[in-house]
Amino acid sequence: MQCSNIKNILVLSFGILLLYTAYMGLQTLQSSLNNIEGLGVASLSVMYVSLSLSSLLLPPLLIKKIGCKWTIVASMICFISYSLCNFYPSWPTLIISSILLGLGGGPLWASKSTYITITGNKNAEASGKLSKDVVNQYFGTFFLICQTCRVWGNLISSLVFHLTPNAGIIYAPNQTVCGAGDCPVALTQTGNNTSGRPSNTVIYILLGSYTGCGVLAVLIVIIFLDQIQGDRDKNEINCGSTLLAAFKHLRDKRQCLLIPLTMFSGFEQGFIASDFTKSYVTCILGLKYVGFVIICFGVTNAACAAIFGKLSQYTGRVPLFLLGAAINIGCIIGFLIWKPASGNFAVFFVMSGLWGIADAVWQTLLSSLYGVLFEKNKEAAFANFSLWESLGFAIAFGYSSFLCVYVKLYILLCVIVVGILLYGAVEYIEHRKASATSEEGPKD
Image (cartoon, rainbow, N blue to C red; front, side, top):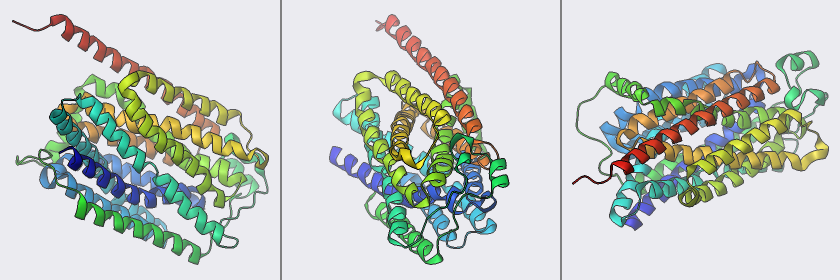
C-alpha cells in the first residue's frame, strides 16, 4: 500500500513537473519577450482571471464526475495550447489560449491537492501516523520535485539563447529606470529599454521543446497514475451547486482570514516572474540571463519545499510561516533600496534565491494548511485556494504595465503584513479549539 502511494505521488509530481517546465519557462519570459503593448503580461492576467472563475465552477464538478486522474489529464491538455499559440503571438492567439489555460488551471491544482490529501490520509490510516504529518510530507515531496520546473524551464531557455549568436541580447541606453524606479511613464519618455525579439528560429526551437514536455507529461499521467477511490461520488451535481458550495465555504471564518495570505502567494509569484525579471534582470543583464537567475530561485525553492515539509513535524507551522514572512519583507525592503547594476552581478542571484526560500513556505505549507484545516470539505477549500491565489496573480500581472515597481513593492509589503497577522488569528482559533477539546476530556 505504502509503495503504491509513493509511486502515485512520484508519477503525479513528475507529470506536473514536465507540464510546468514548459509553462513556467514561458511565463518567466512573457514580460520581456512579448513586451509590445504589454501583450505578455496581459495574457497572463487574463489567464489568471479565467483561472479564478474556473476554480469556483469546475473543480468539484469535474472531480466528482470523472475523478482526480482524468481531471488532471484534461487540464494538462489545456496547458499545451498555450505553448502552441506562442508560436504566433498576437492578441487573439495569446488571449484565447490564456483563457483556455485558465479553465484548466483551477481543476488541475484542485484535483492535484485533493489527490495528495486523500492519498496521505489513506497512508496515515494504514500506518497509524497523524494525517497532517503524512499530508505535509507528501506535499513536501510533490513540491520538491515540481518546483524544480523553474530550473529546467529556465535552463532550456537560457541554453537556447546562449547557444544561438545574438539571441536574447539587450541594450540598456538608460539604466536609471531599472529596479524600483522603473515606471511605464519613464519608459515612454526615454524609449523602450528592452531588446528586440529573438529570431523566429530560436523561438521555434524553444517552443518546440516546451510543447514536447507538455505532451510527455500527459502520457506519463495517463499510463502510470492510478485512479483512487473516494475522490468522487455518484450524486448528481451541477455548476450552480458547485459554485454555491464554494461560496458557502466562505462562511468558515478561518477561510476568510486566510484570503490575504493566499492572495499574497499570487502577488509574490507574479512579482518574481514579471517585475523582477523585466525591471531588474533583463533591464541590466539582458534577456539571456533571465533563465539563469530564475534557476537560482527554483533550486532554493525546491530544496526548501522538501525541508519545510519534513521540518514542520518538529517545529510546527507557525515558525516556518513567520520565517517566510520575514524573508519576504526583508527582500521587499532590499528591492526598494537596491540600485541594480552589472557590477553587483551576484546580488541578482542572492535576491532570487532568498525569494525562492520564502515562496517554498507558501507553496508547501499553505497548500498543506488548507488540506489539514478543511479536511471534510477539501474540494471547496482547494477551489477557494486556487481562486484567491489566482486572483492575486491576475492583479499582479494586471497592474504590471501601469504602476511603477516601487508602488508594486509597497503593495506587496502591505499584503504580506496583513496576511501574516490574519494567519495568526487562524492559529489562535485552532489553539482555542484544541484547548477546549482537551479540557472536555473523554466522556464516560
